[in-house]
Image (cartoon, rainbow, N blue to C red; front, side):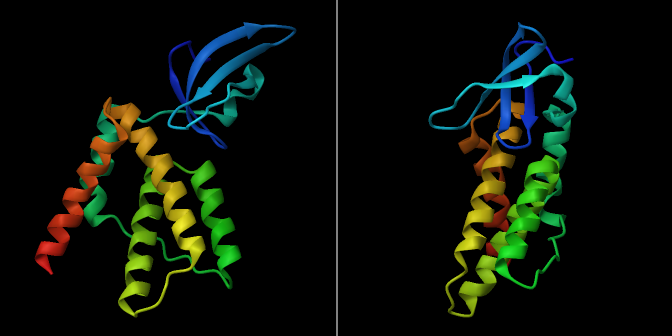
Length: 166
């Protein structure tokens, strides 16, 4: 059972803080999503806590950031953009932070490749990139006790190194 003040990852809302545990007819977590403009408190029965997962540890977060340059991209290609979007959204919802970071790297690369061919990337690529980026930045920021902007800068230094090598 999670405690008040802990951070957890909800599949639909991302990183949430456990604001309280209400003892109504059944025990219910009161979760407050972080990183959203107008967060709404979520009630989740304690009996459904298997839907939640704990936020990464500090060491796990540092490991993901260090492994980013060598992380492989996801090779999944659907028959249509809609199937790809469905696949990756499910992976973002139910996967780990590492999965979300890998998806970010995948779609940054796909968008760059499309632009290199002087074409406009599909809107779905931007949407997946934004969702995966937000989910991973929120979780890494909580784990590292930093702002999402500071975490973004840690990743950007790898992008800077990569572009200076080319």
